[in-house]
Image 1 (cartoon, rainbow, N blue to C red):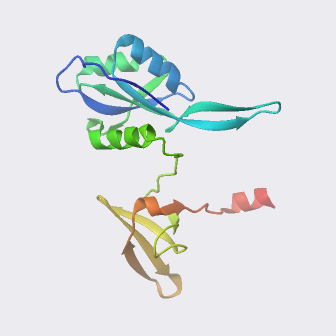
Image 2: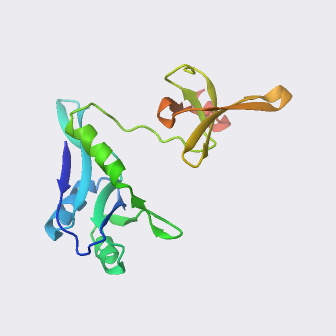
Image 3: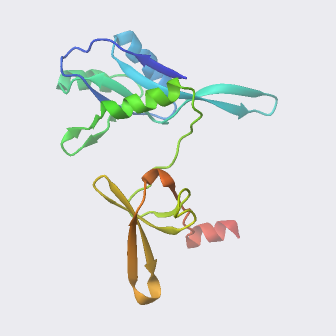
Length: 188
């Protein structure tokens, strides 16, 4: 369920980075990386797809639009990656490419290696309206807030303009679909 190549990088200080790809180009890029000997990890999951005449199991990226490469921070290494057809860029901040912790790559690998059924889940952003789906707070809705590694749910009483905050695990919340006047008109 996963595609991976482990090879020595061109530098001793190789780290994992996320690569943003064009739509549906993840597997093509993984093949190109393999041909170039660049260590990469493309987590794949099996999904059932239904066509009008048949049903088929297909391998799809766990994180559509992304795969991971192990490379150095050297500009030449990054340029070589960006020259691959379908690669948009490395995921970066204002300081440059953002390293993906080895532990996060290892967690995803372990999950897939153990054959545990999983699927993509929306990542809650600070300010999103969310609902708690597990634990003692299941069913409660509020605003998702992040402060460093801590996540909180803010529950407000609008009439008195007061709020209360409680710590939650980001994995225990799901985004709510916010209804806008435009979406209400479309559904009417």
